[in-house]
Image (tube, rainbow, N blue to C red):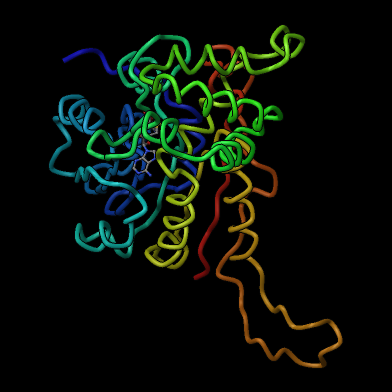
Length: 313
Ligand SMILES: C[S@@+](CC[C@H](N)C(=O)[O-])C[C@H]1O[C@@H](n2cnc3c(N)ncnc32)[C@H](O)[C@@H]1O
């Protein structure tokens, strides 16, 4: 098997925030290179157990090998975490004692040329985390309308030249449909003004991020999984989430704030009529970020934000 190398971000901070202990049941929704799962297993010895989910088969093949000594305490499920409620219930992890999400793609997915996530390599235009899924980046780029592409680039990539890029894609595909990341990167580069090309990151970076989010419906899956998390957590247990861009972080922050909110009656009501009580409390008023040392060792950690919520007793 080829080496599966992903440097785990905020490893200790994220896992210790769940306060794992022997006998506890923990869910890692994003197995990846299994760094967080391995630490969860270690800190919950001797009888804690972990349910680890990932939609990417390669992550499971790696974990089966890497964690072979712990398989009696580890349940692996290849699926989308949007089905968390059902997966946890089928595996006997509802209720559970802690849930972790380390969102986005792993370095392995990003760095494997043939997965088509990166503009750095010329490869088939793919970007599916779950290779069993039918919709790929190629499907979206060759079939969505100008307006749909533009919305994706603007909403998910905060790309200010979204319209120009979408039009350039639509006119280019009339002569020849897109097949590769290289072709797309080239069209994006040519579509933006020369001055904008000279500054900042690679001109295709935002478009590739946006397409990846759309192909994998990353924000939809997160929203559904968050709702399920609160339902399956045991009273007093925690959910910890590491996000890597503002779109994800906004969803996490707003959801936690909503859960922590009590009465929503207008202030002039003499007594509460809504009857709402907080579902728990936010433990991270400000998100936990990586130390300077971690960022130096792993630049990907620079944008990581960890937020933690504790369910009420
Ligand atoms: C950043 S990596 C996780 C790294 C891992 N924590 C570690 O320590 O190595 C994110 C992983 O989550 C998976 N993933 C992302 N969204 C998912 C979803 N909706 N359902 C299941 N897995 C998902 C990706 O396939 C990827 O392997």
